[in-house]
Length: 152
Image 1: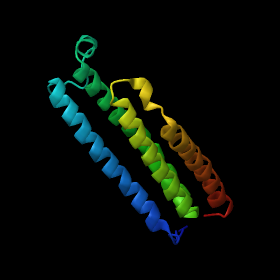
Image 2: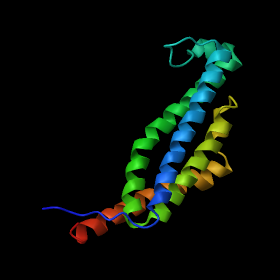
Image 3: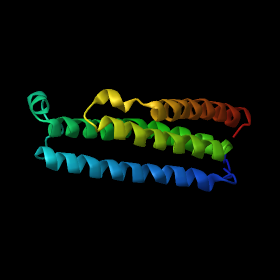
């Protein structure tokens, strides 16, 4: 049995949204590298230890920058899957939701890297990141339901 998948009009927006995450990761790498250098944390040490972070604001900021990057990496596999699935049925919604998540993630990072982890959750993060994840999850789930019931 073969199935033909027709890529819907507007799927190029999904591609653009997915590509935006590469730029997000690239910017986070630059931020982590900058804070690593400022803190004097040598490779392969992943984080400054507790004593280093307590003694040095630069080391604390490095840990915060590193955590933002790691947390982004934790989210991306699921976001990619949900975006691609939803994009098969509703590409504009999928692209918009992922784009909103990226904007929320930028705000999350800017707040977190101040050295005060409580600043990671701000109005932009709350309004953009969580609703976008829920949109992708709900939309992808419904899209799978549609694909299954259509016999695809």
